Image (cartoon, rainbow, N blue to C red; front, side, top):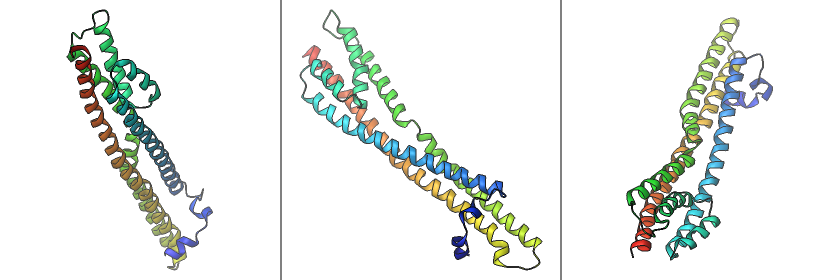
Amino acid sequence: MIAFILQLKLSELFNPSKPIPLAVLLLLIGASLLSWSIIFGKMSMLKKAIEANRGFLKVFRKATGFDAITAAAEQFSTAPMVAVFDFGYAEVERQARGRNQIRNKPMIERNLQLGISEEIQKLERSMNWLATIASVTPFIGLFGTVWGIIDAFEALSMSASVSLRTVGPGIADALVATGAGLAAAIPAAVAYNYLGGQIKEIGMRLEDFSLEFMNFVERTFEG
């Protein structure tokens, strides 16, 4: 049977006379392409975010004033920490304007949390597509499998003799649909867990940074 499938031409797999198996196969191929495009794009974005965070954090920890930090923020503009810093610094400026003192620390902390939440949402964008592809494509493949088996039995019922050539195309459609469903689902599931772990780690780093920011504010205005 495996040898028979390997001998099939692409024209037999993409057969317009079989619209349901063809639609299933094209849908699974499209889902797989979408999954891989999200995976590569998200990996690149997270790598840049982690590197930019690392560079900005080094400058932040060495800085003695907000002027040096705001200058570094322009250099590391892709860092999620910079966005969180901007949220916190905007509130610091409002409170310190004209008085050079901080009146409401909880408000600064809330602003930092808003910044963290917004950045996490940006990092998680499109991740729901990976989860959907990982959970749905096996069932789409299973639907194609069932349809291929039905085709095989129909061909068998209309044939005077039982042969591999009679049931082979239907079984081949079934196995191809199964394989395509798994090929789309497995990378999406692995990437969802791996990239989700990276996003969670970045979120933890942002929470730690918010504490460092508040420490910096206290040293600057109360030290």
